[in-house]
Length: 419
Length: 173
Image 1 (spheres, helix red, strand yellow):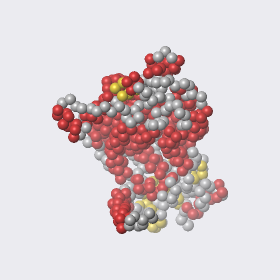
Image 2 (image 1 turned 90 degrees about the vertical axis):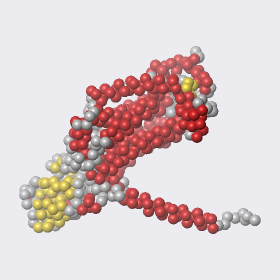
Image 3 (image 1 turned 180 degrees about the horizontal axis):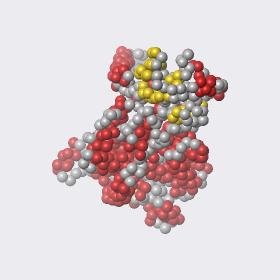
Image 4 (image 1 turned 180 degrees about the vertical axis):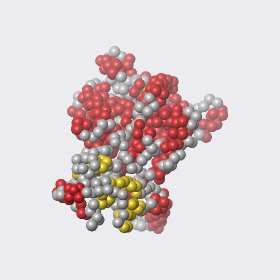
């Protein structure tokens, strides 16, 4: 990060900036030197910021019409859908926005996994990102409870009961979470309160995420450090802003496609039946973005074991920077890791698929194989491959594969084509 | 002059007492904020439910709501009772005799929380491999005494505190 002293041109600007250096901050953000070889996988940070702001704005509007009470919540959501001006649009943007948010965050996370963005010196960026991801899951889960449909109620029952697996104090914790002896009105009102809080916690963590990013600067597709800022980087504005804006437009087309043409395709029809504590729906499934973890939970025939593995699947990511022993960041130059990366992608997709299926027969076998492989990838494959793998030569600088006709050029080109 | 060995000073005493009082004060402020989430008086007031059982035929069951949770009241037939009692305890993941799960002399009445001990779904009656209950969420099978036989649930379905007020009335809670 190059820190040239910024001086506002106008006298008033200088007066203000001397007292609160907001203009210096704006200048830092626009001039921020960015590796010039960033590909479109790097546009998801901007897309995610857009998703967060969309959820906050539509959420504030929905809260003006929604009633957080067990007897009124379901009707108030229908009131939003039928009576409130553009209520259907705002609610569909919010509910599909959650799915789009997770779609973007999964691409963002796998981008990090492929290009080694979690590695030194970017471990803190990675860990803050995982904290954001955990909060996103909490917010999405609580938000799904608010319409007080059958899936809301029974999803809340199953997820809160996970805590009852904790020995000795589990039942007290579950009762404390509920504020009752089952999921009931007190549960709904506190979930509403926390659902409103969490996006602002995420916003705070996003500021830290970007702050931590701006210390070492962006990783990039070849995964090497910036050697000469004047040759290897471009200013964030206008080069990256225009690229991000183009990617965002494409993303918004898909987003709008869901909102206008298939607003309920990612939801579950049982959630249009009001919550009934006497009847559990025949087949309860979480939202698609939680399915891989649900598959891991169900793959273990023991209650506590399943809960531990499910949370373990997320928490193991926190130590990922120390499990991966390879010095080379980008998978472009790691022929063995590159293959394991794609196997992991397939593994997570398979887990997601079996998570939506009944836990029996072939699905249970697949879930168990998928779960074992998931943990093997992080605990065994990453450390071992890091030691044994013979990596391909990395270019001398970011500009090298782009501008020179050296042997590295073909590799960088091949990578671009794949993307 | 300063001595090399460390001596406890008045300042150390002030630090320690300040931190201690501060920690106790912080705890005293945080506890109400945590405890407010526990069930309130209105929730606790719903602690008992009285149920009329005179209309239940042998082999049938009804479901009532108690503390927001379903309670199964099943009037079992003699064959069902015999079958529940013919199982040896070694076969059970959570060994409990059928006799321990009903009131003495009221063997036909099985009163239990209709809540799967895995993750809290409501099991379906007359389903599953053991003719008792089957939980559709994650596939736990319960027998005619509500005991877990197969699947991920760790325990038998819970027997709530209840009593027979008279021949036709059960008070739960």
